[in-house]
Length: 527
Image (cartoon, rainbow, N blue to C red; front, side):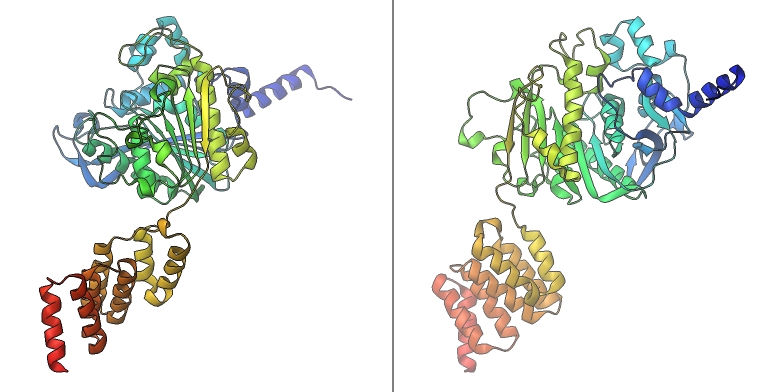
C-alpha cells in the first residue's frame, strides 16, 4: 500500500475535518443540553423566521422594528423550526445563539444584534442558577443545530411544541427539539406571548391566544414540502400543555400528545383548561403520554366526583409517568445544563438526578411518537415496561398504561356526513353503529331538530328533513317535539295522513301542546 506524502496527509485531514464539521462537533464535543442522549441518524437543520397572522393585532416595542411607537401591526410570530438536514453546509449554532434569540423574542435586544457574551441578556434560570464561570462555558458550547442547512429529501412527522409560563422562549426546550429532529422529526414552535403584551395571564383569553399561535405555526409547518401532513404530534409543557390539549381536542390532524408537568389531571384553582369553550373531553381521543411530578398525584384514590383526566379518558391509549422530582424546571432543557443554585419562582434546591430525568423525558417522548406516529411495535412495548425493570427507577417512581376502551362517534361528524352525503347514504351506517354500541354516539335532540329545519325550509331538502325528524323519533320516542317536527315535515310534503298521525302522537305525549291541537284541527277539518 502506498502512503501519501506528509503534505498530502495534512490535506486529507483538513478535507475530512471540513467535510465532517457537524459530525465532529456532535461526537467529540459534548453538545449543550443533551446530557447522555445519543443522537439519531439525522443531522439537525434549523431556521428562525418571523411570520405574521394578519387576522390578529399585537402591540409590541415598535422602535425595534422600524415603526412608530404605539403603531398597530399584525401579530408577529417567531417560528422556530428544526428539521432533518444534510450533514454539510451552514453554521453550527452555539448555546449563546439560542440565548440571543430568546432575548430577541421579547424585544430585549434588536433582531440581529450580536452583543458580547458579557453583555448578553441571560434568562433568569441561567443567570441565577449557574456560576459565572459555568455560564460562560455553556454559552460557548455547540448545539446540534446547523443554521439554514438544506433539508433531507422525503417527508417527516411533525411535532408542535407549546411553551410554559416563565419558560416562554423555545430556549427552554431546544434540546428536546434537537433530539427529536435527529430521530427524523420536524419540530416547530414559537415563544409564548400574551394577547396584548408580553405578559401572559392564566385566563381563557391568553390560553386561546397560545392555541391560535400554535395553530398558526402548525399551518406554516404543514405547508413545507418535507413535512408529512398525516403524522403530527404535540408536546406541551406547563401552560403549553393546556394549549396542546385544546389543540388536540379541536384539531383532527393531531394524532398523539405528550404533556410535560401540565396541570390537566385535576381541576386548577384558576379554572383552566376546562374553562375554555374548546374544552371537550369527549374529543380527547388520541394516544396520550403524561409525565409529571410524583407529588401531584395522590397516593389514595380521590372520590368519584374528582377523578383525574387519566381515569376519565377512554378513547386512545394513555400513559402516566410519575417522576421523582419536586422541581417544575426539571422538565426543561435547564435540567440538562447542570443548574447549581435554587432559583425562587423556578425551582428549589437541586435534588435527585435532573440530567438523567431530562434524558429519560426526551427518550420517552421519542419512543411514544415512534409508536403512534410510525407504528413501531417495539417502541410501544418499551413504553409499557415497568420503570424499575427498564432501568428508570432512579427518576421514574411509577408508570401506568391504560389501553383504549371505546372510541366515540361524534355527533358533529355524523351531522357533517348527513349533510355531505345525504340521509339515504349516511343514516343506515349511523343506525348500525347505534344498534351495536349505542353509547358511542350521543345525539342532542335540539341539534338534530335544527338540522331538520335547515333541510325543511332553508336548504330545499324537504324529504331529507322528514328522514332526520323520523330518526329523531327513534332516538327520542317520548319526545312530543320530535313527533311535532316530523308531523310538520310530512305536512309540507303533502302527506296529510302521516302528518295527522304524528301530530296525534305528539299530543298524546304532551296534552298541553297548542301547536299539535291546532294542526290536528286543521288536518281533520280538511278531511
